[in-house]
Image 1 (spheres, rainbow, N blue to C red):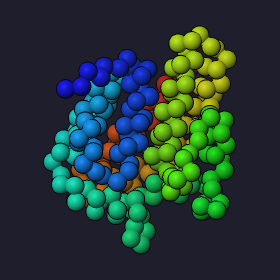
Image 2 (image 1 turned 135 degrees about the vertical axis):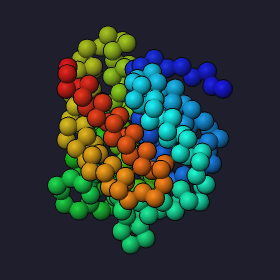
Image 3 (image 1 turned 180 degrees about the vertical axis):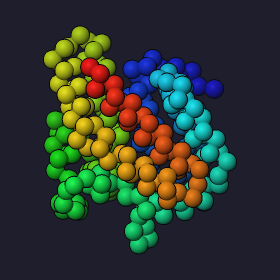
Length: 211
C-alpha cells in the first residue's frame, strides 16, 4: 500500500500526469506501478466525483485483458485506416491540418511561454492529448510553487497562461474528443478514461473562471 497522500494542489498536478500516462499504449506497468491506486488517492483529494471516476477506471482496467485493451487503443487512436478518436488537438480545432513538418504553432507558442520542452526522441506530434496533459501538469505545478513562495508575479503569469491554454486549446477540443472516444470504444476502460479526463479538464477550466 502506498503512503502517497497529497494535498489538493499537489493532487491536481499529479492527476494530470496519471491521466497522461493512460493515453499511451496500455501495458502491465499500469498495474505494476499502482497507477490507478495513485489516481484514486489524488482524485479523492480533489472531489468525490473524480474519486468515483478513478475507482471505475481502475476496476475497468483490472477486469479487461491487456490484448483487448491494446486492440481498442489501436482502433481509437491509431487506425489502421483512420483513428476513431484522433488524439491530436489540431484534429478538433479550426486550423490547417498539421503534420510533423508543419506543427501546431499555437500550442508550441504556449509550450515555449511555459518553459515546456518535448524530448527530441518523442515520436508524436506536440498536440497529442498525453503531451497536453503533461503541459497542464507543469502549469499547475508551477502555479503551486509560485503560490507557496509568495511570488505573485509568477503566479499571475502562470495562471494567465493556464487560462489561455484551457480557453483556447485543451479545454476547447477535449469535449468532442471525449465524445468520440466514448462513442467508438469497445471497452469500458476507454469510455471511463474519456469521461474522467473531460470531467477533470472542465473542473480545471471552471476553477479558473471563478477567479
